[in-house]
Image (tube, rainbow, N blue to C red; front, side, top):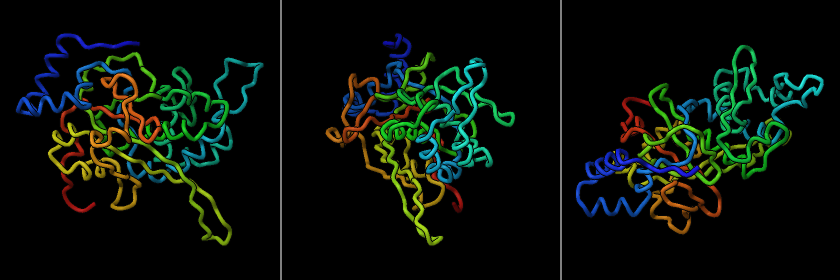
Length: 299
């Protein structure tokens, strides 16, 4: 679906840029970069934030394991209208036995499973939003690692400890376009590129292979100006649960990497590939994100 912005959106967008950037030369610089896309109703998927930081970091490796397995058991064709049942191998990963694991699983389900598919377990309904293109096949089989990392980015985009008041729009070559209007998401934040890798340990005497996840993040200069706080520290505050342990690789300003992170298609739609990989861009409705406030007190 091709989206465009109405006259009101243009007036508001230009006014905000002028107020934020001040001089004409600064405004021109903003319009040459990703800030221009802010005035368009970009195709993408929006959702409220939903994943606490400590829960994500406790369960992110298990998310990779789950996405490599079929999500559902084979359906009984004698009752094709019955609700699907989770694969016992996915259940055995333990998500649903822990409140934090339930929240992480819920958002992975929303990101990967197609709209209209739902399953109820112990009174909680998990509903698909179909945010990531190509991920709906998780229902019947494991996903490729390239799709898995896109699902990880989708969950990562909603990792923060703000319980309410924060909505996020995702854009990218692999992000589905939901039917909602996205005019309010005019503030670019960053491009996120997830990586999954194996970790081998032998603490029990036998080698054990698990997964871990890290993410390269390229912040926009527009976000840094609006944040009025060290952007690396702001994103660490958004994503990390304790210093030096979260796997967040801050790469600097997106605009400083025009060959490493290339625009895929029309730049106003916020679709980027970094090092040849489709990555995920985040947009906010508030000019200054909650994580732009410096921490007070101990972590």
